[in-house]
Image (tube, rainbow, N blue to C red):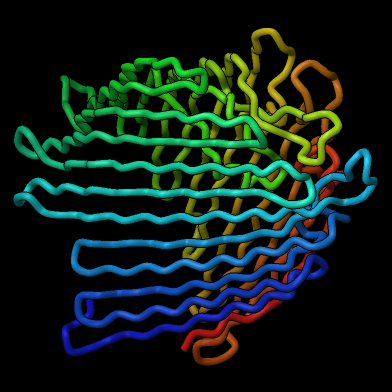
Length: 445
């Protein structure tokens, strides 16, 4: 906490070689004086082959600002990219596309009483894509949300609120508008005998691209009970959750165009399992079952430069999840996770680009002298590239070691690598290099 007669200023700069991908730099400036705080972040990357092999330039400029005066906060973020897409069938060359995304978030938090606080938030997301392909893609996503946190009776935490959202999409000559409004209530702690319950309800209305309106109830329930001294039994379920299309996905996924006709996804899920908590160890095992109506999945667009777009697919997914966390020694932390899924798809054979097996693991060690060693890796199983075809991308494993170490006062160095086994493609035709290494410095003053 900063007193009224003091201020803090921090400037941090990161420089990484990104070899063989390209140069990577980031600068952050922070300042706090009295009841106000601010931050400015500028990031520039020239990733080249590290992102899309043989696709030439790939540039990103990110800027964000954040200010806080008592209970009011705001954030402005603007990002742009220049990316090379798959070769056009008629031009026979890589086509350049420019992507931009503007995010504005404003939040006002107020304390109503000793046990009650409210939070009002407004969000704006504006994404656009244009260039050599010729068809402009634009998305506007505006929303607000009001949350109230309180306790009743006694100290049981309760959340209530409501939200609204408007989405507009355009791809070439096709466009659509969608609106949504919902309310929610959630009781996060109720004791019933040996069980602890958390339950909620989120009724709402939302529109579809064809002009129709749907109603959802969206109940949810979590149940936990203690079996013995170190074993927790868990049950969770939620039905009718609605996931509206997100136009900003085309910025982060790089390879897709907007689909204004994309319908909202409806999700129902139930999971049951147990968690063991001996000293310095946590093991969680869960079986789950999901019903995904109008699930959003990528589909290849034939004879187009922008090679994919999201479409709707009905599927049932069930499987097993394992999570392990441990602290075997002082300064050492380890975690690992495994997911195996079975897919049942209506009117199709596969869920495109969704592997049935996923493994993630990470081991980190932080020495008293400030050195930090991190080892992480994973495994991604085969991924089918279409709903009905048998063609699939190969499974692969990844290993990412990194080492940060102090060089001087306010200066630290970083060594980082990424190694893949086998041929790795983010999407069909977008191959990644099997080995990349980074080295750089971070300066704070």
